[in-house]
Image (tube, rainbow, N blue to C red; front, top):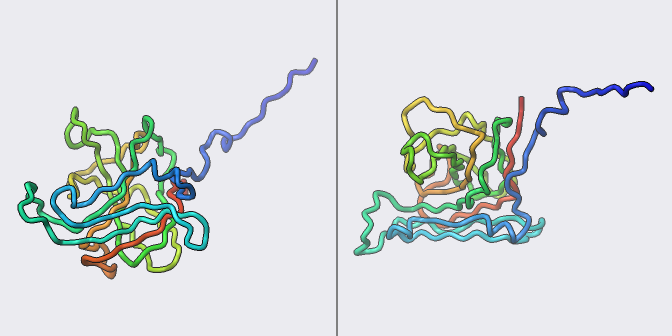
Length: 212
């Protein structure tokens, strides 16, 4: 009786070229996120995250108002105001993006510059502490048109409380704990809309891609 041969190729062992991380086509998605703003520290900015159908199916809508006002008598002495963000709740464990080199977001915005943040296990800032490491990159969102922003993971810079860490570090892509998208009144990319006032960005999905 002949022995069946086993055939395989290297492509069978490779992960897919893309991985869906978040998909904003269901109201269940709201359970995965929480909002934050300077209002937690005496500021007056506000934000909301909704799943809405604005004519092209259900999409996430992150919107609000950036304010430079600070409440009188606040116990917090904040050095800056005018910021809001949406942060994912921690994954059940972590996700491994070691096989990918690019984060992509499909969004439609208002001409502002947003900040994409990736959170990894803490080994840079304060080992043994609960605060996660954060890696950030700017995302310019053109006004009124759907756009896929592709950010190489190598472009994400290590940060500590919003400030870039001036050191040579490499993200541990195999231990991703969560992500966030935020906006502040200062802009960030030349030519982007800046200053206090309303903001709005629609979100379709966030994916990881392997381009090489």
